[in-house]
Image (cartoon, rainbow, N blue to C red):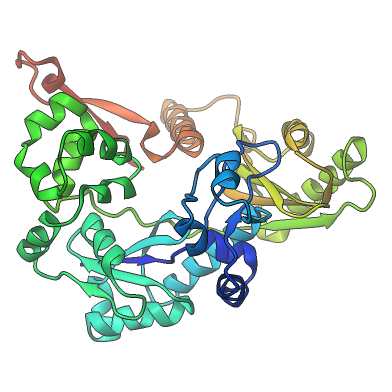
Length: 402
């Protein structure tokens, strides 16, 4: 069974500080929304219930949101704070023994089966997850990821919705609205055209058949049919990793050459940390807190894993040009480590040693590509049916094993 933990309005609560602040503003009749980041696309982020009642939705253009709700109160966006609070929530779930797959800030999945021997029952496992989160959460349990997500959307804040029987879960999904497809990024674009075609429920969508949906919408249509049948891909829990972080107040060096010098100090401090144990840096996160409020962050993946101070500083100093406003403090964190710094090899090596070195370099290249473009970025072609008349059936692409 898959457990879905959904924390409603997570971004807004994290930016506002705590739930009591939002509650006081809501009880006062004020509509809240997370302001767009400086220099970014001018669209509002998470909105409160009062703002939603006035027609303001997440992702709406700022001008349209203010036109619909002139009294809208904008809270400065703080992606650094949101990420920090979300990491704390994930670590809290992992503290009960769960292997967590984070989908988005405020939405995570984990398998309940391996935890039954630890906590005794499914109900106690859900209760432990709720206590670990220490904040209001909607929890749904189902045989697949999509079933649990739909159950979490229909669950009450203090009472989880459990769909243990797969046939019963499939029947329950058949009566749910087709708008549930909007909760998945791959099928969100199908909601509007399906609604225009008169498809209202997932049961009606399933009766259309996979061939018709694939012919009209391609791969997202085939995936939507699988989701409507209660099928989904297996979970991909995140791998536990270390996170080293250094931060420093910049004082009067809020921009320009002085800020680059502060960045050089952070790079030197990070590379001097004993926890690094001689490993290279594959991906880092550069962040800043603004003088006027809010924050900014950018993920940087190097072209190759580095441990040289000068090259790291040169790569990161170019990203400081994207800083939208003067900074109050600057932060640098290691998101992913690479292998230890390579040692000099002998001039004369055996063929086996050279082959092992080539294989190691190939594995390193695959890991670097995955760090840039995701886990499914590195694929290999596998012959399945060479004699087939359909080209797509002759060869398929599969991820390269670790």
